[in-house]
Image (tube, rainbow, N blue to C red; front, side):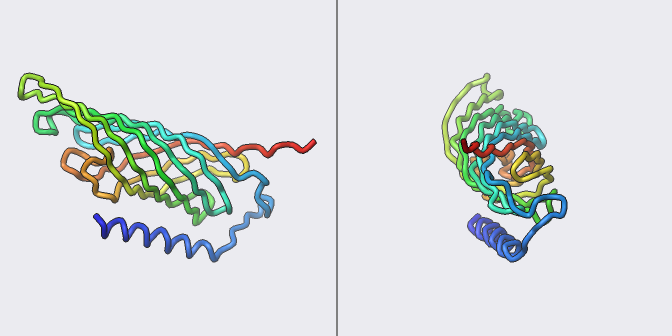
Length: 202
């Protein structure tokens, strides 16, 4: 687990250093960024594997210091379920909330690499269908290191629509992005952001 986290962080820093040496300008846009680079918005997440299902809402706020970089904070509300047929006779459902910082690097204007640390508080409900439907509940916390690649229609200073495919590299057994066998499964987030307009001077 520690090796995976260290590898992911090293990879993100290497990519950042590579792109930091390049100056991205586009001929069909003004060379200078708009005065206000702060954006807000939200995404919807969807994930599934054999017998499991995940859906969530992901509000975020961020900043675009350059054409090739977004950074900010993302929050999440997720519902996750596992069928009893794939979980040793126990039907499991959970609700989690949390958040953490993210970074998106754009090697080209429509393609990005995303990394995100996310901490979650998880409420589980377990129904043992092999024991007469006995129900139990408990809470847990988990940490996730999300990484993936995405597509965006992004104009800094105006708006951004994105779709990203993510995996959890953290290996936490309580992660909402792993199946009943502890394996990370791919999930998709899609969302829309808009940039705040600068105030008008009187």
